[in-house]
Every structure is written in structure tokens, then in C-alpha cells.
Amino acid sequence: MRTRYQQLLQKYKRVLAYAKKAQIVNHRLYTNNLKLRQYYNRILKRTADDTKRLIENRIKEKYPLILDHQKRVLHIANALLQDMEMTRDEFSSSFYIDLLFEKYLPIDFTSTDEIAIDEFHFPILLQDISAFQTDYLHLHPFRHLGISGKRVYNKRKKLFYYFLSIRDISPEIELSYYEKTDLIIETLTAVNMQLLQAQKTIEAHKSLLISLVCSLVEEHNKETAQHLQNLRIITTHMTEEIHRLNLIKQAPYDKFQYLKDIAYTSVLHDIGKVHVKKDIIEKNTELIAEEFKEMQSHTIAGAAYIKKVIILFNRDPGYSKYIDFLMIPYQICLYHHEHWDGTGYPKGLKGPQIPLPARIVAIADAYDAMRSMRSYNIPCTHQEAVAEIRRCSGTHFDPNLVRVFLNIERKLEAIPYT
Image (tube, rainbow, N blue to C red; front, side, top):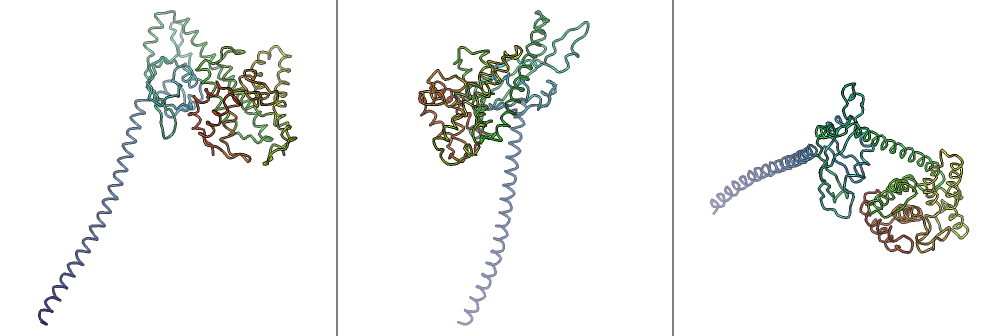
């Protein structure tokens, strides 16, 4: 019995030794497996990154110009910039961007389906015109581009991307020009480009002057620079949609420029609040009747400031042509709190009696007010603000303009609100 016990004990010890060795081997295998899995994951991530980079490079090779619907240049090939004799910043701020969206690129955002962009002719005026002119040779100082591509919606970023392929069609165009009366065509095209550049410069001056006024008002008013920027964006989207739908049949001057000027001057809507006591503007609790009456007076005060400028310009024939332009901020200041059903202030105007610029700004201002963080306001979501404007159609707001707003509301989701 004792001998049997010794044998079993020896077997047990041997099994125990084998088990320990197996445990060591198993631990080593487990450690190696973890290392292999980590190595595999690193390789997988590197491969995914390389694949993504290759795809992006391939896209950029195929599409030398990529824009989004907010007119931002996401990518432009260096070779294209060299052909145009421009830097990236020069191109991004040039009138060519506006021209692309106003004349050629699809801006109907009611559908998120991919849209093909058929090739169109797009001339670029080169910088050094003198290099193309001699006593015996007269060439067109343009780079003629054939642009085509597609528009794609990015659900994650809620942006529409324009992927544009570009080819140089200058030889084809030059040949066509030489077969026609090229001197006349060239002259008219150059003048047109100069006019477009001049228009861009005038718009920049308008924007600069209006921004200076807003900066001064901001010292007194609770309205922030971000609110004014948001209001400009919203009114721009609305006026572009109004132009696309051809909703206005008459305007004091060119309809397209008139609508753009509404967007430019929308930020002046509350300049009359400089007239209101600062403690009333900064009050976080509900205003009493007397305070509310003084707050309402900002509409008349703001219009009075613009009226002084109008009277001054009327005295000088050289500036009188700007009166129609100044009437836009005058109407916005005075009437942007009027309601479609006549319950607004200060005049109680009703329906079409309210000037168009004021009706547009009323909707844009209401949306931004609902979405913004203010001491007296809990911000709404985009969907809640849109639902409220839809609910107020026909009471506070012009029903036709509410439909315009609903057409472009998807664009407004890209505006950052905190």
C-alpha cells in the first residue's frame, strides 16, 4: 500500500510539473497572441489611413476644385492656381466664386440626391494683360476653362459638396474667337469682367461701412457680432432663394442687386437700440409697460438715423443715386417688428403694406433669436425654431416668405449655435 502511494505521489508530482510548464507555455502563447492582435490592429489602422489618403488624393487628382454650398474653397490644385495666376486666398475672395454660384452651379437644395453638373465655359481674366499684346499680334488675355462635375450631399457634416473637373479649352475658344469678330468680343468680355470686379469692390465697401456701424452699436447693444453674422447668412440664403424662384417682379433697381443689398443691410435692423437706455437693454427680467414702450421706440429711432443720411444725400446730386439703396435699411429698421396680421409695431401695418426687406428680416431675426443663447431666452433646436416659424405663417410672417424659408432651412443647420 505504501509503495502504491509513493507511485501515485510521483505521478502527481510529474503531472503537476507538466501542468506548470503548460501554464507557462499557455501564458507565453497568450502574450504573443495579444502582441499579434495589437500588431494586426496597428497594421489595419495604418492600412485604413493609407486607403483613405489614397482615395482623397485620387479625388483631388480627379477634381482639382472642391467647394461647399457655403462658398468655401475646400481644395484647389496648385496647377490650377498657377494657370489662373492667383493664390488660394485671392481666388477664395474673388468674384469668381460668386459668379460660379450665381450663374452655373446648382443651388436648389430641396433634394439631397447626387446631381451631375454638365460642362460649362468659364473664362478667367489673367493678371498680366500686357504680355498678350504686341503691335502685330492681339490675343485674348483669358484662360478658358471647361468645368463639369457633380454635387454630393454629406449627411454627417450636413453640407453639399461640389466636385469640379476642369480642362483648359483655351485653344478651342481662341480658334472660335478668331473665326468671329474677336476684337469686339474681347473688348466686351474685358469690360464685363472689369464691371464685375468693380461691383465686387463696391459690395466690399458697403460691407465694410456697415460692419463699422455695427461695431459701434455693439458697444451699447446686447446684439453680438455672431448674431449679426448669423442674420446676414440667413437673409442671404433667403434672398438667393427669392431670386431663384423669381418671386419679385419689380424693384427700385436691378432685382438681383436689390436682394443682395437686403442681405447686406439686414445687420442694421437694431441700430435704433442706441437710443434706448442701456439698463433696459441689459435687463434680464420682464419689462414693465413703460420700459417695453421705450424698447419699441428703437424701430423709429433707427429709421431716423437712416433718414438723416437720406436727407444729406438728397442735397448732393452726386449721391442721390444711393437713395434707393438707403431706403432698404430705413424700411428694415422701421418695420421689422410689424406682423403680417397687423398686430405688430410701430405702425400696425398689415400684409403687403409691410415692405419686403422688413418681412424678410423679421423671419431671419426670429429664427436666430430662438436659436441663440440669451439671458432671457432658452435656445430652441433647429427643428423647434422651424416649427415655430411655420406655425406663425399668416399671423406674424408673410406665408410666401415662410415657404421660401422652409426651402432653405436645411442650410441653416450648418450655422454654429452654442
